[in-house]
Amino acid sequence: MSSPSFSAPIVQQGFLDLPGTRLHYAASGDGPPLIIVPATVSLIRQWLPLVQFMGLRFRAHFFELPGHGASSPYPTRFSSRLVPSTVEALVDRLGYSSISLMGFSFGGLLALRTLEALHSRVDRVILLSPLVSRRALLYSARRQWLLRQAARLLRHSPAQRAAVRMMRTQALHRPLIYALSRFSKIAPSILESKDALNIPAATLDVLSYTLDEILSMEFAPRQPFHTPCFFGMSVNDDLIAYPLTEQIVRASFHNLRVQEFHHPYHQPPHPPTFPWLVAEFYPFLEMLDIR
Picture 1 (cartoon, rainbow, N blue to C red):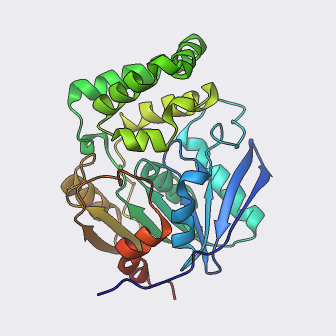
Picture 2: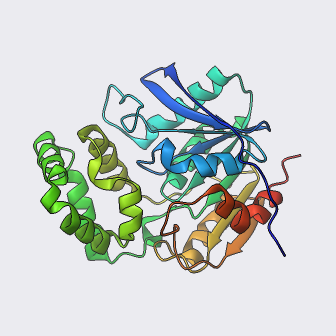
């Protein structure tokens, strides 16, 4: 069966002055409001096709985390506990009484933290390959320990400055990408597309705190949410264990719909395009039943 043909919705970008940050955001589509919570250090330009894809059914919004991209950093150290207040301020400024909420990959934690704080204003939750427990990471205990030590080291300004100098040294570019790929199990093409060696010190700060939290987290709500949840993930995910992730998500939501995918990766090895997202995932978009 051929995939449907759509024109990509127009994207608008802008800034909003919110408590604690000047937030850079993008929006696309004309449907009910959707807030897409970014995965760690995601840039708007990297995820515009996803914003447009979700814009086929929603008025989809995406933002750069405070301290990353063009969003100004919080006045205090970054913490995922600050993100729900930023999302709430964003929703209020946009004039929405309720929203749908979406999290993908490492943004799953931020989306769930936001749901805990704003559950009375969330109509539905969409979780795509979310990380909901450090136990679901397909890293050895030793690798997780080393990552956590590196994250804690990067909290300190001298280490951040040294890391930035190394990343800006052209002769070290290829070996650094190779080393990061081997250690993180993320394809070099993905690191290159994310411009991983060109992030500023403020972003390293966000990354260090986020990684430390990811590597120590166990999401467990006080009681299962009644908010409808749509969960999609590949059973062959090469970074996050599907069975444990599904088990935790099932235990966290009374009202759950599950869509299994079968691609052999956590995220595509090349940046997703709007036509590719339509061809691969439009049936999942139809499943969301937003009427």
